[in-house]
Image 1: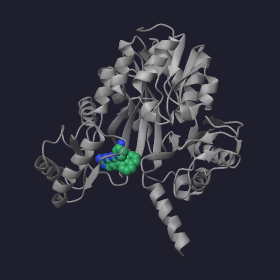
Image 2: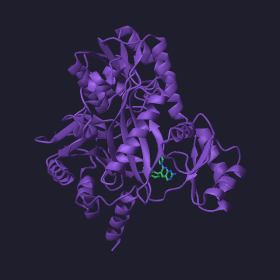
Image 3: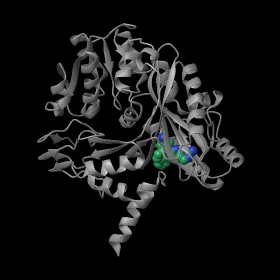
Image 4: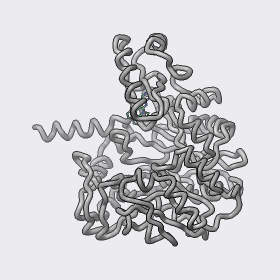
Amino acid sequence: MASGRFKKILVANRGEIAVRVISACKELGIQTVAVYSEADRYSSHVRFADQAICIGPAKSARSYLDQASIISAAEITNVDAIHPGYGFLSENAGFAEVCETSGIKFIGPPPEVIRLMGVKERARAFMREMGVPVLPGSAGVLSSAGEALEMADSIGYPVILKASAGGGGRGMRVVRAPGEISALFAQARQEAGAAFSSPDLYLEKYVGAPRHIEFQALADEHGNVEILGERECSIQRRHQKLLEESPSPAVTDAQRSEIGAALRRALSASGYANAGTVEFLMDETGKLYFIEVNARVQVEHPVTEFVTGIDIVKSQIRIAQGEPLREILRGPVETRGHAIECRINAENPDTFAPSPGRVTGFHVPGGIGIRVDTWAYADCVVSPYYDSLLAKLIAYGGDRGEAIRRMQRALSMFIVEGIHTSIPLHQRILADPDFQAGRFDTNFILRFQQAKAEAAGK
Ligand code: MV4
């Protein structure tokens, strides 16, 4: 079906995001079908959906990534649409195509736009042509180490080699001097070829201590695009975000409106539809540069929901039904106050090692300005097969200070027994004077761990 109201949606995901999508469907009066692996029989997404179908064994490759099993489940249950959540099949252009050829609406961008955004140097070239600032770098794929050397010499060192089919930080190499480039080019090419569909590389000026800032977009299927402000995502470790907030303490009003205007033009021209995130790096001088597009709903979308009052997941579904943004948003996008999200992971807060097992005690905080998105419950089991995200704790305040204090209050009232969680780490981050002053970049957690190791060594 090209558009029209959905009666039933299949949620092709698990965990907190599956519960989040089911919540949106319930509010829209849409029936839901959960799919689950043998390890997830007792998961809450299975319980909250109207119907549930087992799609295979614990291993994702044979369940949540098994396109044929998911399409079969969708056909058996006669759903109108599939919501892929994040991860798994959410940015798989081939899966989006299979959905459409099976007569099932894929709740996400059109396959050709997913494909464009997945080829990172093409997305970069496109944004650059549309007047979105990008870092100095290669115009397209590098044909040889020689071309990379020539390029790097003209831009100046350090530079970074990135996989065209990569993203999320895998397969990158920082080149600090001309002598290093041929070996690093060969390594990066080899790694990209093994890890992704293609060995293609491109090159950019390297920013050593960037902030990671992303803009949230909503686009309808009629060419209209709105930007729902930005999120600050610099508090991360090894490309796993730990804490996100909106707005960013570092983005100025002028930047917000300039970047916002350029992104509206660019996304509209690309044929983008549904929700999307545009990632930027901010350099030491405060300038923003496009790096990549995430063509899906993101883990950290709730901070944007708090400051805009817009339900991003319900918007995704209504966009996929063909509704215009004007009807969905009913007025201009305005932001107010400040929101922070802490990812509560089932992991050791010092070593970051996964901590699967049974949750023997569980109590979530509530009260004014607090939201908890979780799949967990007392006596649930955290499986070693999937990511360690147990819950997202989101705090809203009239300003950043109030959001921080509210988050600290809520963390002190969040009880998880039986496994380790990242709660103590979040308490240390929130108490840090640099964090409280908004003075940090993507190296914050590294410095934090180093300081802790030094203190322990003495
Ligand atoms: C960069 C960079 C510095 N300079 N690109 C890592 C994830 C991927 N999406 C892009 N990444 C980076 N690209 C240039 N030109 C540094 C990173 C980077 C990073 C970016 C965002 C958040 C955390 C990061 C951690 C290490 C490196």
